[in-house]
Image 1 (cartoon, rainbow, N blue to C red):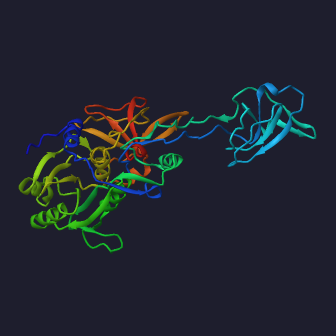
Image 2: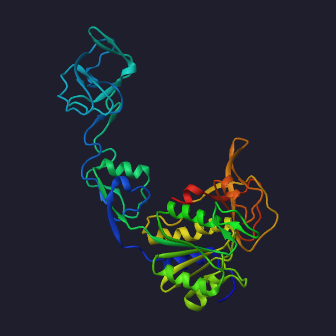
Image 3: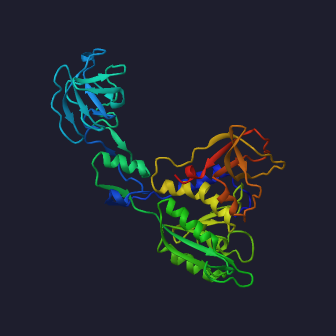
Length: 403
């Protein structure tokens, strides 16, 4: 296996070409669909909204019946949820937000622009057709595509699916993932630290990232730092999971067993990326189950998961959009040294002289996870480049990287 660094575009092309697309589906109540992926297209069975309705509380009338200074008789009252009678010519109808527009009316005047008198209403506003009316089918026309296969369901998608009357939806089954941490020095939070020990940070970072990605964690263990234990646990995980994600054990040290086990007992098809942090990422398989070997440092785990593992997972889920979309924003910082690796800087957007700029956390060490808590995204410094304040950078918000 060559030690040459692989550019991230080349690595992604390789990885996405190997991603097995999940074909298993399940039907669940709409209330349980948040964060899941649609397994089929959904068309609108009827117009949404199903009828013209008022966007305000006010009065419905025919615009040509309005005469400035002349009162209009109120002939009807239309609460939401009722079927209105046709509007009597030369009159107005009291109407409320969401109420169906009566036949014959072509405008609604909001109540704040109306004076109620004993002889009717006086309108203190310009009156023209189509004011304050939400037209039938303005959101979705009958038969049109509401949401496509591969859409991730957020709050707004849940609402849209409800608007076409769906109580249940067909979803892609969750990808089953095993999380394996490496290192005899790792202990779980809640346990006092002994000499040379540290808390297992990466397990909890990965648990949350996989939940955001719509995956199911089926195994979560810490590997003992021996070749035999690493092999046995990886092979056992392969029988339970669709994907194995390890943290640590992929560099060149004598105790880095994950990469060695993949080379000897499985397949290692990718190792060492031209990115910073995250160079020693590995990818392969054991007993036919794909394995992502992420680096051990906490910030490296976050960056490599977001930039490399997440597109792979999206591909397997059949997502409509695989790659995140970055913003182009000016930098609020400088760098002086260049690297052969593409750097992903923990950064956030701040206002500098009333302009949105990207600020970098001062310490970009791969062991400083607090930098990611301060940040709200990643700024990209291209290979062989330095950053001058004000130069444009590609910036990926965390919300975009996890969408």
